[in-house]
Length: 258
Ligand code: PEP
Image (tube, rainbow, N blue to C red; front, top):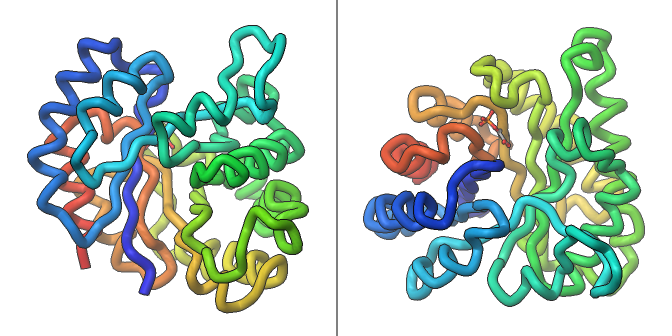
């Protein structure tokens, strides 16, 4: 019922020339995998070039962040309308933005509203730190991130009950990102099944919670992806490091095909 989705987060890697090269390697391998929705999220400076290369393919394009204001004197920021010309997706609340750039649940929430108002599908990242995990605070932290990040949507105009595809949630335990230490497969599924979907059901409805796609992120590689995708509540992955290699990323997308 939920179409698998795999998105690549290129983080702060690739010049325009390098991005063109990687996309030219990716497209032939990804195009035939019709059962999986896929997207790549390269740096802002490469979006225009990558958008041109993806035209006519079914590979989506996303940004890694944005500001919530429409325009104005906000030096260095990128507005939703600027992204909407090029992208279908935007990653919001990535743990690296929360940890290094002061992203809070409140700013994530403003950005989620702005993205939806511009028909950009937000990929909303939630996840606990190692210390929070080890002290049994995963449920508390992830629930708060969801409740505050999604605040004001349930009765707003932006999010229609029936359109669960208008947002994607990524569960990314912070201790598993870029560390090579993935969460246990069952542990990740349990967070999605027992914390994320119930909170979403409480905020919206049970049918919405069952229809919304929830990805796992954190050291997903070609050799462990299938195990995550076989879990009943995990609908795909947000892939960082491994999305920078065309063969590896293509194998991950292949593993998501039912
Ligand atoms: C990410 O950047 O969202 C991520 C999950 O990174 P990695 O796959 O490298 O752990």
